[in-house]
Image (cartoon, rainbow, N blue to C red; front, top):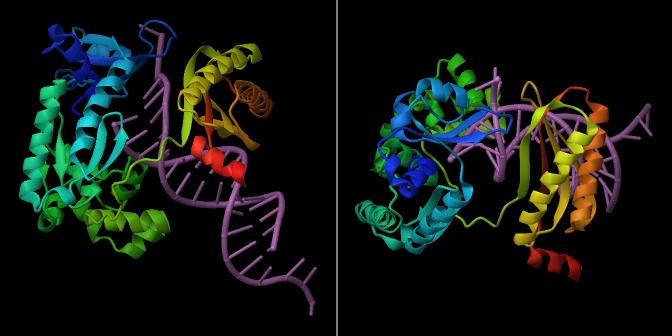
Length: 349
DNA sequence: TCTGGGGTCCTAGGACCC
DNA sequence: TCTGGGGTCCTAGGACCC
């Protein structure tokens, strides 16, 4: 979806359309403390993009419309969109709240038909939800994803098999999903700026520099090779909640109170999805924004609030004994989740 | 009043097992 | 002359994505 959260707000409040719109995550520390989640294109033109502090966004775009995130709204619109997408494809994989992969192989006989189908899907999404999106059609997920970002908003880009190398060669390495800040910095030092540059490095050199898995992947990705399948996600692997504390602290009572609230929220999500958990983590983010964790795996899966809360308490206490810095943000996370089916299977053994 | 919050995947070292 | 090779699970941390 294009600038998804902001587009949802434009749909709900037509009067803000045409103005810069900025969707904010307020930290709760008061005033404009917090960060920008996303913004529409009018705001982006002024330099307001995801991740920057809200106060800076206000300096860049004083007349913009600033709204807090309304996740329920985005989630419900997302559900409508995903249902439409799913109905058109052979296999379907939701990537995030506003992205999905659709396997069209069995539905069309060539790339021309695939393009027509993609246009039809875009059209139906527009008709039924009022929102625009951008699509990429390609022989694999890696290239399709890059193609979907190529023309935005409301774009449709097709990359046929014999066009892949030419399409990728002039793009920045950070356009490859999986190449972020750290990897691109190291590649820049090797004189690599574009995906084309990257494809000229030997696999051996890349493995020497980045290790077996990442090195081999970089070589493949630079040539647009990707064998990963479009497959339905089994369900989430972990559920977490994290918040910013009112002020930096390491006071036990304040932290345990926060842990209680976070545990309750996590527990509610577990309950609605009928999931058990086997490991619990306490997450702490220090004033320099480094993340540290303390986790424990239980002897057996649990599904009750008491176990979650008391384990989180113990982890938080142990953490404070081991580390002596002030905390800015704290979180609680559960992992090793299992649904009812898996739980039953375990029970039979 | 500087810097959300929700995720996935990978790696490395240690414990433990056969 | 001390002691192989293969595997799983756990914890902690890091990179990356939206």
